[in-house]
Image (cartoon, rainbow, N blue to C red; front, side, top):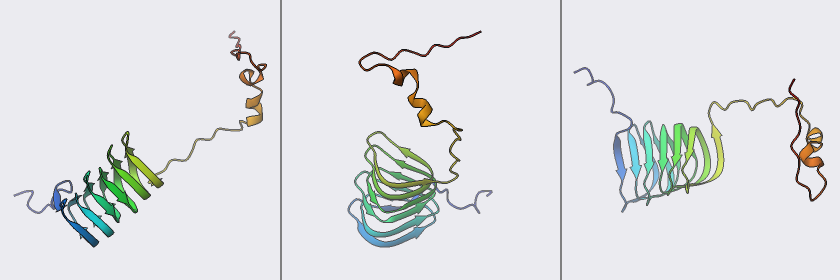
Length: 153
C-alpha cells in the first residue's frame, strides 16, 4: 500500500518504437522510451530515459533525463543526467548534458556543453618565451636533449 501513490520508475521502459516502425512528429511521455525503428524528424521528450537501439535511425531533438545511443542520431540532445554513446552509436548534433560517456568506437560530431562546467585552472604567468629557453629546446641540432640538473641541498 505504501508505494501505490508513487509514479512509475523512470528506468522502466513504457514506450517502444519497434524495428519495423517509422514515424515523424512529437512524442511526449513521462516514462522511458526505447526506439529501434526510424524517426524521420521531430521531438522526443520524456521525464525518463531514452534508449536508441543499434538499428535505430533518429533525426530528432531528444530531451530526457538520460540518453543511451547504440544507433544513429542527428539532432540536439538535452539530458539533465548522462548521455552515453556506446560502441555502435553515432551522434551528429548539439549536446547539452550533465555528463558524457563515449565508448571506444562510438562516434560524436558536434558541439558539447556540460552543466556545472568548472572554471579552467589558472596557470599563473608562465610565458611561452621562457619555455623555449629550456634545456631540451636549447640542445644543438642532432644531439639528444640533456636532462636539466637540479641541486638538492
